[in-house]
Image (tube, rainbow, N blue to C red):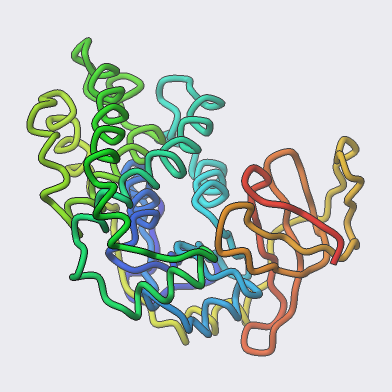
Length: 316
């Protein structure tokens, strides 16, 4: 287990900018539990504005974001890739599913998540706060219409049952976790959608009662916990970034399809929603990541890391 100072974070500490009912934060928290890591929770607002977060990221507003010193990791894909790199044991790929595990997480993060969202917020209906609706409309660029979601609940419940049924089938041979006898990325990815439903609209998860293997697996993943969580303020997290230096080394990728190289000024934008471009100078890139240097008054020099799948890199 990686040990942090019991009372104070430093440039080597894992700081997760998150909030407790964030489903994607839960995905990372389960991974931290699998690896048994110490980490610091830096709670961010559920809705905008998020001035400290966007100072760190250069405008990226989605949660979670991981900070280690002056290196800032945006999106769960790059967060988990970095955790696996720094803390390879226990691995997030116990079933030797390293490539397919990432592909599976694209299903859970997009198709399964959007199906669950429709059931959750269609079921929650009038209980959804208006400020939250307006914030999510700004985030997605389309109406957050809970009335339309409510009307679609019967159809989306069918879709959700079908997809959760795939997990039930994967567990049919009696295995404890999706890829075998140990938990990994596949379990963290599948679990968080159910956790989100339990938090916001637990009635939507009633179908799990008819999937006994899925229900037992859900309890096993829940029992993993979240590692050793401690707390840190947003101001303290920013101070650590400002006092730190990125550990990312400049590296050119000879196979970079669009020719990006260190020193190029680019913008990086999600391809789905929350399309706030982050502008910076390329430090390194590969088929799976791009790291860009940027400077902001409250945080000084930072390097912001993004995955390539699900993000566009364009000239700034």
